[in-house]
Amino acid sequence: MKKRQTGATVIEFALSLIVFLTFLLGITDFSRMLFTWSAANEAARMGARYAVVCDNTFNEAAVLARMQRVLPQISDITLVWEPAGCNFSNCEGVTVQITSLNYQWISPIAGINALAAIPMPTFSTYLPREVMGQDPNSGEICS
Image 1: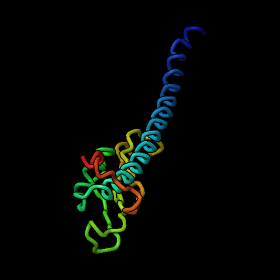
Image 2: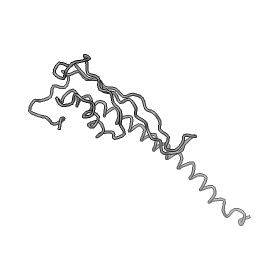
Image 3: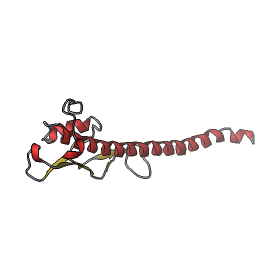
Image 4: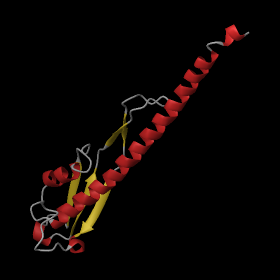
């Protein structure tokens, strides 16, 4: 009887380990997705603040570069100044949107292909000019 059960413990351990690791990788990936979501919100907020405060950021490239410091996966943003057609001195506010951000899922769970890109929603932040009121003696955010 003992001879027929010698490998049973190893098989049970291997099956349990597969289930455990799948569960652990799922939790890890979900945590990464929540982190990416939070970082995208923060990057949109930071991009809007940078655009509103700094005089040399009337273009998308400078704002995008600043946002990529928080989340390097950002590749496409929309920068909309209000009212339309204003120049930097008379703009009332800015809307910054992250339009095409994809989350890279790494663990193969529930039929989701490994390394599949999951599209995330649009992240958007609006800031009016009068909110920021940068100290004229400090260019800390603009450097």
